[in-house]
Each structure stands twice: as C-alpha cells, then as structure tokens.
Image (tube, rainbow, N blue to C red; front, side, top):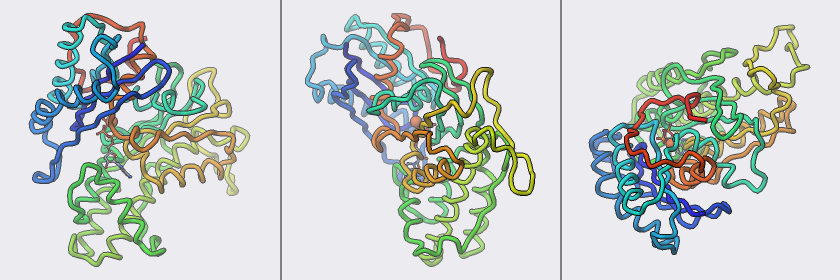
Length: 365
Ligand code: ATP
Ligand code: FE
C-alpha cells in the first residue's frame, strides 16, 4: 500500500510518498523566505503554499518513482495550524482524491509529530508511552495510549517553547532563518564555557503546566539592559546559553513529575515530590519509552540534557527516542505514515474543513 501525504499547517509546503513497509519513497519540503518581515504572516504563508505546493507534490511523486495509479490514498493535515495554510493543502488533497478516485485520510498534525518514531525507530515504542511535544506552536507532555488516543498531561498556559526560541533569537539580532531556534543553539555553543555567567529563573516548578512568556520577557529585559542586539558576541552567546538551559529545565521538571520512580517520594529535606497524575491503570514506572518530537527536539543540548536527566531520576530503563532531524520539523512523511496507521478512517467526505484549533484529546477513534 502506498500513501501520498500532504502537509501545509504552517509555512512549509510538504509532500511525501510512504509505503506500508515504513519506506519513505520521497519527502519534499519547500521552505518559504520570511526574512523581509522577520516572521510568518498568514496571508503570505498561504500565497507561498499556492505557489509551491503543486510542484512539491509533483516532485514527491516523481522522486518516489511511482505513477499516480500506484497511490492508494491521500493523507492530509486537517489541523491544527493556520486556517489559510491548511486550506491550500486540503483543497489540493481533495482534488487529487476526486480525480484519482482514491480515498482521503484526514490527519491531526500533532498526532503525526507524536507517532513519527513508529515510522523511524528500529524498535518502535510500545503503547502506552510518553511524548514530549516541543514545537513552534506547542509545548505538551502527552500520554499516547493508542494511535488515536492521547491524554494531555501538561501544556503551556501561554507561549510555546519554539516561539520563545524564535523571539529570543530575533532580540539577540540573529537574522531570520526558517529555524531561528537552530541559529540560537549554534550561538549558545559559542559561550566559551562561561554559560553559567547568566541565570534565568524556572517558573511553575512542581506544577503540571508549562509557561514560556515569563522566561521570554526576562530574557528580553536582560538583552535590553545589556545593550540590545549591538552587545558583544560572547555576552550574546552567554544569554543564548542561559535561555536554552532555563527553557530545558522546565521540560526536565515535568518529566521528573511524571517519571520519577514511585518509591522515591521525598527529597533530602523531606519535601514531597509533586507528581503529574496519570490516568487509571497507568503508572509512571510502567512507561518505558519517552518520545521527544517537534522542531525543538532537533536541539542537541536538549537531547543530551533530557537523557542525562532521566538517568539522574533513576530511569535509565526509559528509552528516549528522537526522530531524525529532518523528521522533527514539519514534513509530510509523518502525515503519510499516520495515514497508514489509521487506514480504516479513509473517506470520500469532502465536506470536512480545516480545524485550526483541534485538541489531541479529540481525535476520532
Ligand atoms: P506545530 O508543530 O506546533 O504546529 P510548527 O510546525 O511551526 O508548530 P515545527 O516545525 O515542529 O513547528 O518546529 C518549528 C520550531 O522549532 C521553530 O520554533 C524553530 O525555531 C524550532 N527549532 C528548530 N530547530 C531548533 C533547534 N535546533 N533548537 C531549538 N529550536 C529549534
Ligand atoms: Fe509541526
């Protein structure tokens, strides 16, 4: 079975062909250039998809070395994301579906980020497993119970971690790129071992929520007070590193609340460790896989730090899985793969529209 995936939830136009034996026959990502505005505007993103998606799809089919008749279904991102961007992909997918007489499969974008290791890992995770979704629009700790059942254990009350990376990168004077977070990570590496010269506080410790607006504001104030984007490069690198450490510490805090072994109940000062409650019948001790996915999961510092933290918690039995870099950020291979996983949901219902806001707890079973 062969599925064509189409993804246009944000500003990347993506198309991919994936076969049922987990082979990615092609995965094309056409990026947009927003350097003139320094950020993504919905109208310009939609226009970019209109211009780039047709050839992106054509290239994916050619590179996969298949013909139209080999395609068994078309999987497309229905949400969440920007309505105008989602609409372009949906409309292309519906037209192809109708013309080729192949069914359509509507996919949830975050479900696809969460299930990417089922496509890429030699030893795919077994349900239930935990997923830390860290991306441009989300920061969530989620329990995956099946390919369609997710429970959100913690989510951000304000900004996402990816947005914080993007804004701090901008304020440090890093020129716009399609992944400002990656540029910030590169800058942080130049802090010459003095990365502890600056320290930012970690908010919401011990609470089952994430929050990145306070950290963002604290870093912005620090940048202003230090002379703005014109400051010395070493100082910039130190601020970048300090921000990255604080952003990651918040992820570690929630992981500790979910995965600390249950027999460890209090710290050396007899303070009880706060916990994130898991649904009935699931214990943190039984979770053997943590998947970390989404654009920010490309970050090498975060990757090594999370592994270190799990070991410190006494959870070296937990397998920490990250998708390969090219499948952490937006791509259509993950959409096509969910198409295979939920093949039974294929449909010729073209009346379904974009769902810009769509909870992971509300995915059809
Ligand atoms: P969502 O998936 O929530 O709808 P999105 O699709 O826009 O959002 P992704 O493509 O998954 O987000 O991720 C993009 C984010 O990842 C951006 O904020 C980008 O700066 C960030 N990012 C990419 N590489 C890195 C890195 N190495 N370090 C930190 N952040 C990174
Ligand atoms: Fe994404």
